[in-house]
Image 1 (cartoon, helix red, strand yellow):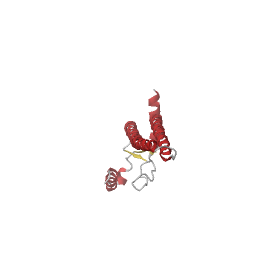
Image 2 (cartoon, helix red, strand yellow):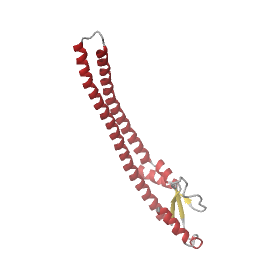
Image 3 (cartoon, one colour):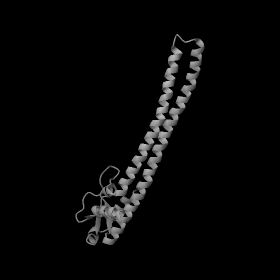
Image 4 (cartoon, helix red, strand yellow):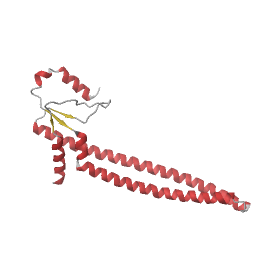
Length: 189
């Protein structure tokens, strides 16, 4: 059972009408706050730059592999050339086997390198996003304490079926814009 389900069950079990007048509820759109925070944009730019560098490294290695493949094609022509002597064809065939093995090893190395780089970028992205989320949550908590909210809901949260947890809020205050301003102003100081 998720934490939200437990919370919701407990909340329903309480006499909601007796405490509803006393509750101060706030709403924040964490997806919007996260997306509009300057640090999120900076991290996305940084990761995209690193992804471009990785692409160019992969393309460079892929170019070397293409050169090997061209060398193999030239050897294949030499092997099938009826004008060439037996010795020349045999030597070309032997060389073609070596080049084929080298090309396979290069291909495996290029694919492994590309996978490794992508995994590194994904891990870096995950770590940086988690740090940003912690920072945002800290600012939301601080604001909520200052204002005196009893409950704060994230209106961008969805259930496992894709249904929004927050379907309606009559008197709740959405303070997403305040959080975006506060976070972005905090960085410009």
